[in-house]
Image (cartoon, helix red, strand yellow):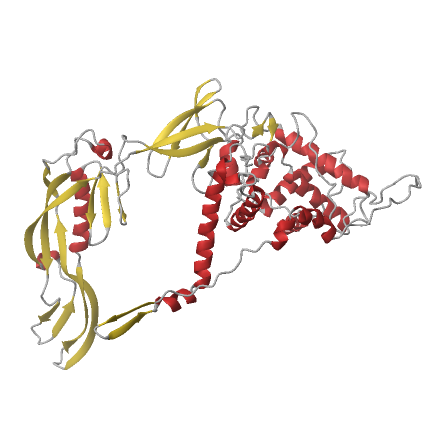
Length: 572
């Protein structure tokens, strides 16, 4: 009797075949392939959606206070430490009141630590600029109406764009710009000159000077050629200078007729050849009769434009050359003579005039895709997703943090009812660095964007509870009161089973696997022998080749066999 297992076909028929053994063998094959096959793990770090929960800055401030207290524990009391913490929190809250009501430095109506740093003068808005230019900060705007201001963004290419915001831009309320580019098939081409092996996609027409690997590009073929001709002329028609280093002998005759000689050294440099080029003249621009066809996606952005333009220019060139002697000798009536060497004047040069005509072929860029700017603007709260990525790796300097702490502490100490630790000396960047090391923290500018409190008007909590360094006790006790001993006896544990005892049920279940033997085969390398014209030939050179690569061939066929077995299993 053969009972077929539903949905598994004839491959796993009871009694006809041992389907249980088949499943077990396939399971081992699949386990081997799964363990050998490379697998990759992916980690997804979400954009900092919970930036409001970050409180790194209060921990740093608190650690600095704890270190000061630990260094002067014999002088200060724990009450003074606690009072310092409270007063610095109050000063931070008071400083937030200097921010405009709609300041972009606020999140949920609560000032961020960046806002406090801006109030005390430690932070400039440009510090929030992303290094790659994707995020820019601006502080100027034009008022359009109540609570509506226009801000102009300009990039390095000279392009500008206006955008409106609903708060007044200032040093204490900067506008955050997110800049992105979208390539489109139409728009304003760019103009420029650059070296390289490819022309920018935003260039409509271009000419390549192969001698210098320089591209000249723009939206006007004649202006492209004019830029090239000007560069060509400046390189080709260069001034050639000559240096005269000479000593002349002057003859001197006095009133009694006595003759003497005097040496006069001269060293002058003058141009032996120079050029004057009048303004280059545009002669013509002739478009080729071949144009890019319509309806083809590859040429959609340049459809209807000529493939090339031939541009002619003329450069009137005047060459000035001097081959004479710049030293002139004057003979006097008394027999004396004087030689003077000076640079030649322009009218002493020989002038040769020529007309340099050139025709340049300008090519239309088939990859032309004009670039457009895409801008978003707002406050820190609305732009936090864009700010998170560039700022989470931008470290805050210990100098900035020390300056913020000093300003808050000095303001707190100046209050009449202050009873905390005095600021005997300013907090140094080195002191902040040591505090960061103890905390194991590396604050970034993203940490500066965390709010100073949980809600508007709530207390600012300076955290002095962190205590992971010897000698920095804040007065609390490290001992835990467990109460009265309930006299509960220790539990009795069963004897831990051995590995053999744990695996024995499995081995008993699969007892047939203990005697499982694939078997062995005796095989020899096939050799071909034959005789031709009374000569015996034997082909066996492949045998040592196969033997030398036995391991690799075994691995390959093991994988092939495993995949075939898996396919049979899954196709059943």
